[in-house]
Image (tube, rainbow, N blue to C red):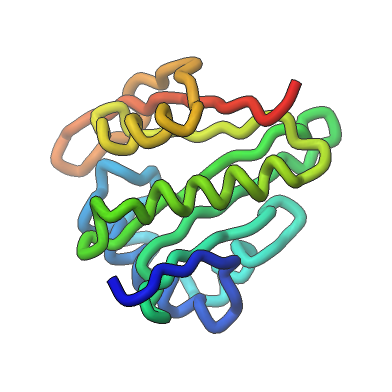
Length: 172
């Protein structure tokens, strides 16, 4: 790995972000609720909302020598009564860079930013129940299971997968 850096995603990153996302959806259909075929048709401009919007707090990207190799998006509830809750979505690290701590680094940076965000009290995520590597990562960073959604994903090959619902408190 040349030099790992993590920073917020910028407009010039969108093409590389879409390419990484499309490849991850195709290679790991069990890990995502979005499907590769539909998402590959998405216009590049549709990802601009992942930069910042009224619901997206940020998308962080991991770069190896300037090459985008990972990403994680954090969204916040826009409704006043639930604005204390953020959600992590779309965690991904390219296959060629797995097992090098990049997901952990993305998650740590995200949690640091969330702790510094006024008014946030907790962050949630869902993860495919059979993805023990991801579940272990989230648990190691203080996430706890609070539920399970059976039959959350139905794959074209007939597999039906559950999602674990996880939560980490940021403050009381």
